[in-house]
Image (cartoon, rainbow, N blue to C red; front, side, top):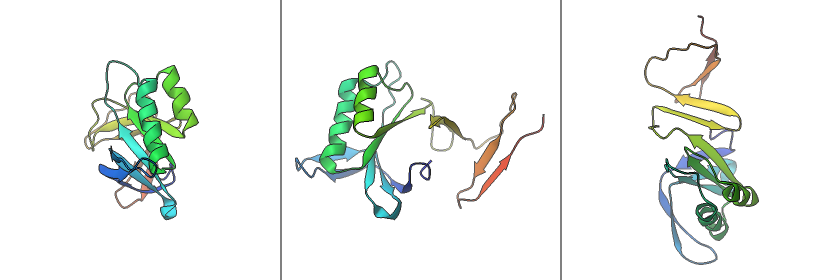
Amino acid sequence: MAEKLGLERVEDKQKVIGERSGTEWEIDGKGVKVGDEGFVIIECRRYTTKKQTQGQMAHLAYSVIDTGAAGGIIVSPLGLQEGATKVANAENIRTVHMDENSTRTEYMFSFLNEVFVGASDTMHITESAKITITHADGTQETFTPDD
């Protein structure tokens, strides 16, 4: 996914100082753009009872503005309410829908009309599918399983 977002790497939770306010922002992740051409703020919100609100998205939007980030990524199982979607679009914040039970190795998320699955066990496919396996070294294998 980093490649699809133009990111060279993703760093873990850290604190970033606001350029305008001087305040310290704790962010869940930092996506560094290819060639160190800026960064995006990554926020993970595992709220399972309602979509992200306009106010919650405004918090992320201001942290993007204050830190000079190129944009943001919100990771959530339920997506955004209408007002939150407007704020996200205005401030270059992209949405990733990730299943609430995801872990670092077992996950399913959708982004840019594609679905990504991470599995460390056997998968049984009942429908036709094209599978691309991306290895830790960046090499890929693509195949269509036989019935």
